[in-house]
Amino acid sequence: MKKKFLSIGQILALGAFLIVYIGVVAGCGGTTEESGGSASRSDEATLVAMTESGSHQNPAWSPDGSALLFTRWRSGYNTGAADLFVVTLADLALRTLVSDGSANVNLPGSASTWNGTTDEIVFTSSRDPHDEAYVIGENGARGSATQVTSRPNHVVFEASLSPDAQSIVFESHQVDVEDNGVIFRYKRDGSEGYVPLTPAGMDCRQPVWSPTRDKIVCQCKVGGQFAVFVMKTDGATLTQVTGGAGEMTDPSFSPDGLMVVYSSNEGGLAQANLFVVPVTGGHSTRVTNYSGYDGAPSWSPDGTKIAFESSPSDPDGSAGTKLYIIAALSP
Image (cartoon, rainbow, N blue to C red; front, side, top):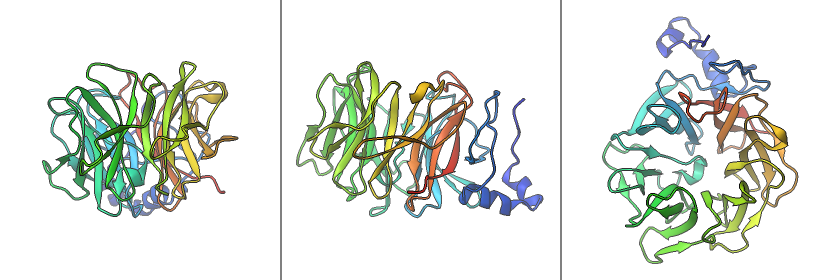
């Protein structure tokens, strides 16, 4: 039986606001069971208990760490129209940022999604004629998004901003083609054109710019499965940093750029959990301990917490995921 979470009004009426604040913002709540199914958590991840319907995905922290940007798919996991929301963690107040009936999707990765220098948020949208990259101010009015890319025969997915917000990287492939993704870099003033960074046919996706400005992390297929790769911003020295059996996806950087957090079923897990690995490669360390699925992680700006999406089973075809926060591992 699914657990029911109190609305904010009910929580305030019961005088439990302080408990919610500590559990969600400080990330120090006790073990929390996932809503639905029989999966239970064996870690101290805490639910961001929003009442908004739909599938909550791809959390990205605000520059000051007080809020999360996320994608809300209306009809289930990666299904139907998708909107961008911002939730303030102190009181779980929700604000709609983008909602126009198309699929508007942000990428997890925090600083590379929500830029603290320009106060811009980057996302992709399926509005006609096909998916392209857009930016909007963090307090932008609906309809104020500005289109950044324009590729007549190629879609643009999973856009990430450089720290100075002058360039973006993204995954692109031909319209109506579902694989063979290539990572491109594009300077927003158009002065450099669309620069491919990864080889055609390798199928690389989900690029995230490092806060240290000098690297990009992404996932590329090797031997039929995705692994995490790091490269310079010009595409040089594309280097695999994870190995072994299992899918390794959704990578993003720690605030100091020294570690990468990602989602994987490595080690024979039935469902993916979160792991961290040095940006130079080496031994990975498990962050979450859950019999269900954990994915799309983002590190908080102060390095103390990681936000992610979670589901008690394989999210594909499900009603969707919820957002959780867990304490990051100590160095």
